[in-house]
Length: 314
Image (cartoon, rainbow, N blue to C red; front, side, top):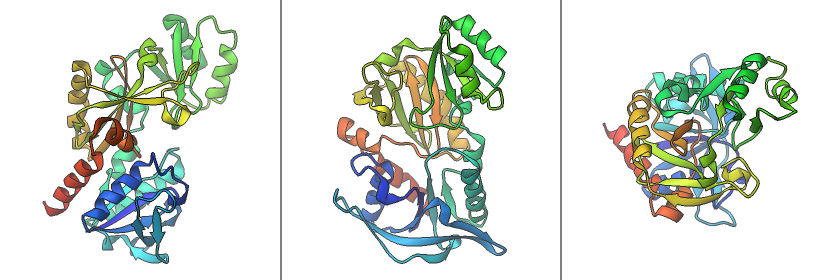
């Protein structure tokens, strides 16, 4: 098939960590023709959706992992499938790209993940559809309500709704003398909503990433252990990855979420679980493929491409 990928500049990726590269290497090994598009290359004309696309050859070589052809104006209808792998922040530019991809989708191109679901399922707010899986939380920009939550739960974590990689996350305790200043900053003086959650002490045991393909979990989790003195269990923030077996609670959470994301056309999803609780549902560009391979001997890219090929042949 002709497989397109929308991703941030491939020359800037971390060769040892990048999941999109893993997917492309697997697809190429099966004979699929790859087309590379950066987010800024997508555009609409009166007759449809287009991109300034480049054919790409990927290589398992840390010195040079790709070769690109000349950029050509390409009708997205010439592609069989497009993988949307643009990283957050989920801002207006991201949303506009989902509109463009949706034009192609409505004319028969399969887009993974489904553009409308990318818009609807904010990675922080989406967990609120599964309260049975979550610790106590509040989504608000009202500093009075946020302070009340802190006073009630004593130890909390505040995060922006559009961040990634652990950016701008704060742990706030009831006795913190800087509560007002922190809230003013994260809410931009009550103009921007944030999520606040009860602090989960089990973060010291790792923030578990569980990848799901079409609603079905991989057979293990990748626990990201925060660096000493750190709150954030993000690899981008210096966390260490270790393999973990799925607990009965992990499997139950997957059973709660799996059917819903399958129905929404969210083929590739990463659940974040701390202790007993679901904390995020990553839908934009889930990672940890390399960690699954290196630590668990699970080739997520193989499972994903198997599924995508099945979608094309169905």
